[in-house]
Structures are given as C-alpha cells and as structure tokens.
Image (cartoon, rainbow, N blue to C red; front, side):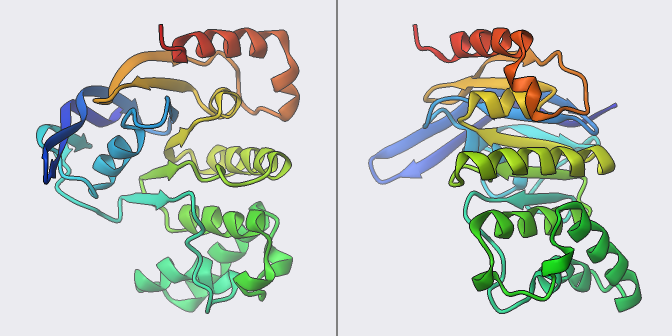
Length: 251
C-alpha cells in the first residue's frame, strides 16, 4: 500500500534578487512502513524536500499526498527529528518523552507504560529522572528518538539526526533506531550524507542531485532485517557502497 506520494513537486523560494528553485519535479512513492534514506551533496534539496513533506515549506508546484489526501501544512501525522537536540532542558528524560502524550490529552495511567516502554528500548529507563544537562549528546539524541516514536505519528522525518555525533555513538544509535523501527514499522524518511549509514539503515536509498534538487536514482538495498554492524564488513555491503558512491560522484 502506497502511503506517501510526491507528484511533480517544485519548491521555489522568493528571494530579494529573484526566485530560487530549490527542488524541481520530485516524483516519489513511499509505501507504508518503509525505511527510506535521502542522500546527496549539500545543496541538492534533501532538507527542502523533507520540510515540504513536513508541511514546513509550501509546495510551489505539484502536490504531496498522504493516504490520498493532499498535505496543506504541518500535522500530528508527521513527526520531525532534527540534527540539533530538541529536548526541553527544564524537563527530565521521562517528562520529555511524555510531553507529546500529555499534549494529546492522555491520562497519566496511559502515558507511564508508553514512556517506560520506549525508554527501555533506547536503554534510558535508568536515566529517566535526569535532566538534559546531565546527559551526553548521544543520550539526548536517544531521548529525541524515544519521544518521536512514543508520539506515534504515521511518518517520521529525520534530518541528519546523527550528523554531529562521533562514529561510535552514531553506530550505536543506528542500531537503536532499527530496533525502534523494527518494533513499530513506522514509515521513516531519513536524510544523511553518510553512505554507510544510508546502506545500513534503509530499504531504498534515494540519490539526489542539484541544485535545483531532483532525484537522480533510487537504489534498492538488498540486505534483510534485522541487521547488525557486522554487515558493514561484508563483501556484499562493500559492493553496494561502491555502487552508491558511483551514483554520488559528479561526472
């Protein structure tokens, strides 16, 4: 079942020196429950495309549909995880994860088991009463992930969420997000500049080029789930890496 459709999507920014077309003619269909990565050089329109799906950037041509309904702006059916931490510094870990659930009007008795479940999945239950100032960067990102999945959107949009982290922390969080996704089977659209990250996480990798941003190629990733980090050392993975790198090189 196709859940999200981008049809002939253009996004143009109004600038003082004239219009700037950030992306053009984006056509993409993403089925429910898929994990998709967008990859490409800086300036190729990845974030603009993601923000258009989120409803943060208006579409200047074409349309974006979710379950056959045109998206007109932001909505609770789409959750966003940014590169920078978005935890609330005045709330504890548990309170951060509970925040969106409280905004939905859920009762405390309904919220507590959900918070416990997702904090256990990201290995933060023992840290539930700590404040963000007491956490490492990787731990704060785990809070972001737990909160995003706990809010239960239909689609999770992730804009380089691990881009500022060290290699070891990033790898641990790649495993964590696959565990979360494996349990919930949310639709995930994930932006990255990291070739290995795109191959390790996704079922399909969308290669973009530009400006203006456009889709150059869509690559099916052949590895079964669940995946562990040993996959990155396999000959098949290295072969896919070379193929994807070839797609990213400007010729």
